[in-house]
Length: 261
Image 1 (tube, helix red, strand yellow):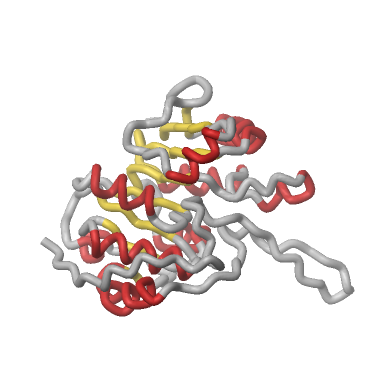
Image 2: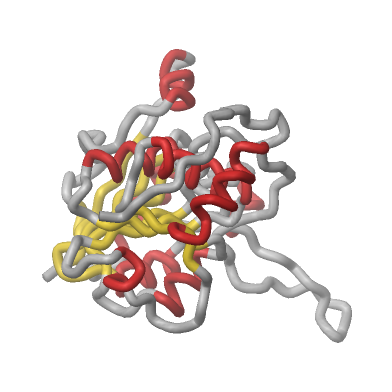
């Protein structure tokens, strides 16, 4: 059993931090080429946001970071060494925000190992704090671009599941190319799933939900488990931000696909 250091109980989240419990955004940088012509770089799983960590989150970094935070390296992740056990189902979560959903699911599914990838420091600190307070032994964190993590640290057919909850919708049409869930990245995620493994996405932006269905449905190695939008699986909680949106009449759509055998 993993032992947990416990950071102090200060639960303040600074006003400047992004407190929504959602996935990190996909962004494309546009540097200028040698002829002065802008050209896009690869899609990334995030954009940089302003924000600062609270003192409690900083203490969680110091106390729990060495045990639960993994370094990015361009080499396959040794899951048994990272989690201290063999043969547990392996779930990747891309962009866990402040960690509320991840902590809930990890506690509910204690027999599964969860690798959370998030770039924003306040969110990583908040997740570490939740790990100590719950406590959880089945979560590890990599603070790095998820695209590079998937490409370089996760071999083909190594995952039992992938969660992408409330990624940035980039609602303006001219920004749609920045969305994370596009055909090349969906194909990459699908290649990392074991046969029978699942990809679960959720969004509160209907047009993005429609795109998710279209893009995932076009990936030949995946099949829709519901024929359309899926009922919210019991393991995914309704967060306070989602509840607020539902009270305001906003919809939420879950999409669950499975890797063909």
